[in-house]
Length: 188
Image (tube, rainbow, N blue to C red):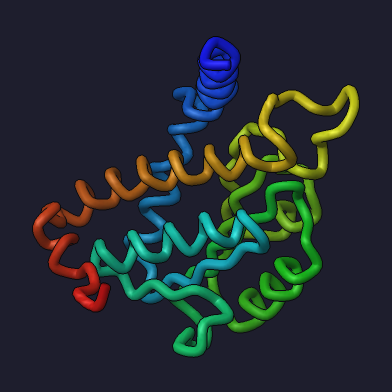
């Protein structure tokens, strides 16, 4: 069984590599620039994508950003000078589309993380970040490209991409690791 798991681990790592190519990583600079210049950042995603968005919101908070998760009781309203950062891996979720509409009407900038840049949501936002990976929308039959189930490859790539984004932001914002740690909760 160990050999099988070793082989699967190698396959997963090889599937992740294209999602961290130079072409993909070039998207970090404009995203970082937009985030640094925003007043407030609100993050949203559904399902496991939502969990990755929450992880990003936490790290943005650790960096000292005014970051929130849409749907939390303490999430503020969105408006001009703010960014709504959403994930729509397969290109469309009805809840994401509705929130994008609200944010745009309020004058906020909208950024979409997606595996399908031609999808309905990425087509109406200010900035699209394309993470090339299988989502649940393309995980069956001949469409399947990953050994991982459903959208796991996309979600894992989101996490890694976001950690690289945080490192870029930390450098741009001149935030020390000690300052980030100082923003971490002590209520655990």
